[in-house]
Length: 629
Image 1: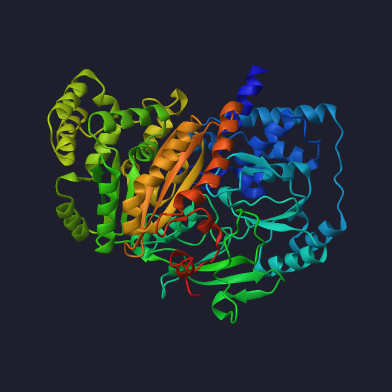
Image 2: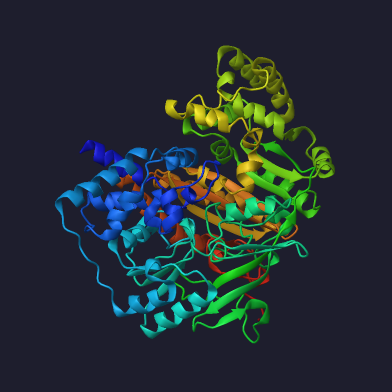
């Protein structure tokens, strides 16, 4: 039983972002999931089914048997989950298959009745693509707590139906049938974008079409296209999209395009990044956003409680702008020990339009992003803080000329991506006796950030002689060392920009557990003047409930006129005591923060911004409570 308990606890570590649906390691994805599409056939769903089987909540149905039979035990997911959050899922997946097969040997099959609503829906989408089988429903029931954006404590709300349409016309017909039967519905992207319902959940996983228009350098995408897929598609044309979703999240029914993205430094956010969108309104009518008159479908009121709003429309296709990826694009880091100084420089770079990206990151998220294991990430954090006086970093991406100008602006605080890559791979070497001597020398002698890195880099380059990939896999599980050694032979993975551009970083920063996010935005000067207030708010609240927290990032946008920030409070989801404290902390965040920003000029919360839909940024960031409108 101890084994089962450990497997259950491990299964709860899954962040449910659907990373197992994208081929970010270039090894393919779950063959069962690709064929059957429902979450239940992917590792993400199988982990939920495993817990339901342990709790004896599922009857033996034909779908449940099929879920067991279609798992090939290829364990592609084991490598994916390990890379993302250091989670081994092979034993859980294998045990799930065993439990279902045991049920087959001792139980009779429960037949699931098809009601009148399901009959009509199946006439639209086909028998295969609408379900009320408990084995399918269970996987869609567990999600992150939707009472606040970024909060990720589990709740469960079992839907009655799952529907997988394949066209805009099908969506239109589905909405009309839903209205006829007075059934509540929600739409589902992937992972974070799920909104819970006890009615029908429409999953767009089958609508994955992408059409590229070379004349306008844009792409028309279906609502099932994932952010990583669009990134890889655009890369073929030497272009990049500007999206603000985790890599695995589906796009068109996610948050406003470009919200909270590192490239919003130059490309801005939301309505700046899409050209047109096809939508289905609540009556089932198919409309084009650019042709709608008399009503602005690009904006609706933020709900008081996130996730409770009535859906005014469903986006079934969206046309995204794609931006040129310069051949001479390079990246670098500007190091700081002080957050305020980092924010001032990031704002100034944005105001001067000197870079595509000028985003401030905390050192812990950078370390988590670059390393596979928490242990090696901890070592990098330790060296950065104790020896290099390195607490914050501005990631800058730009062409050769822009980077040269930024180097002059940053003076002695700039390091290039290659030197930082050497540091990343050489962390273990630095903690050996000779490496520690160099670090102690650096710590004892005052010098600039770049000087410290130069001294350290010279030692590592001399000792490592083209850093071997074995070093970065030192703390990886033995049976995975060879796989990740070969994976890391691609030098791009040593560069922080790789995981940041693809939004893989949004998953890898959660190695320490699920998180409760606290985010704020404001006009830049007010933001910088008052950053210590909101920082103390998060720190004090985390300490009050004995929970770890980290500064994650801050990004300027709208040519540096505005800035936003996020801190995360981390939660171990399998420890009941920690979860109880986290729920109290979460409640207190939303209770206290209104009073917090009452006297902070121009401050707003960023979490509810994420639920606006196809929003015009002007309707949000220039909103003023004292507006004459």
